[in-house]
Image: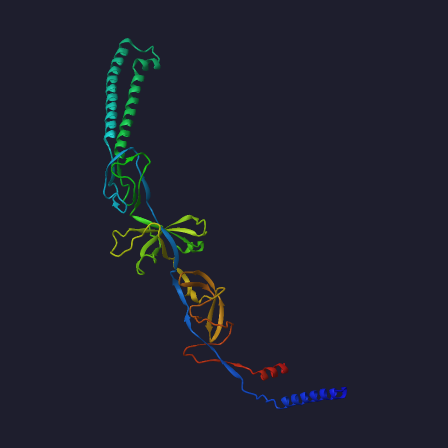
Length: 406
């Protein structure tokens, strides 16, 4: 193929392409002007904010511990000759009840010996008092005006009298100590108690300091809670003879769902938790083992973890909404005359159910509860049963015309 034919073919191809392009543009459909499309306002649900005085309910978790918890030990040595049947793990004893009896014979013998020594010292005192009278009579016969005070005391046997009086005091102390050791041979419950452990029985040889068993008081238990330091200002502790705030206690993993115990705020521990840096407070629960409570009342167990709901101090002139309606960065969505208003609010406290607001929201405001994909101030909103509002959206041609005019 020569060069002339090649050029001719290329020109033919270019001409055909141009004709096809011209045909496409000449047959393109003409855009017809349509009326502006309209977008319907977003359908939302709202609830009114509440204004007034409210009592917050603060949630916390903690562990149960005993108020009175002692490791019982013996103060004297000897064999155990009797053990009360109630002194066993799980048993209950009353204050002053005998738990163990250590052999008293040796202590009784020592007591009798010390009493005899006291009687001997008292007899010596009586004899010395007779000698004192004789010495006074002799001194009166011979005359003692020339004697010094020291010589006069020697003649009247004052040192001998003082020595016997000292012996009497020592003998009385020895009798008291012997009686004390005899009493200590009987081990009694120091308070109304629940027996957790029992380490000795009849025949056991005990020595001073030996661990006999562990007892905890049955009058009350403590629940130690950790709460944020910022929550302390809303907690009411007992003062002026009044009880602390009410606390509802649940053990969801052990008790029935409806089972609860009631306690009272007792005291704030004056140190933060070393790991969590939270404040520690104590809740007092009376009759923790439910011995005098109605049937079905669950007992508390030492060391168990429980959930607590604390009634806080009343909050006046507050606005309350569900904490689920508090948005990010402490904002609240409000339906204001059919338009979305994103409000910045001042949150004073958030408990387990509500957020308490002191500024930025009124009691008559309608809080939007629906989650929106587009959040912008001023977008149109409508609620169920309200008259729909629409927003005009211009076409591309109208937008272009407006831009040229501008």
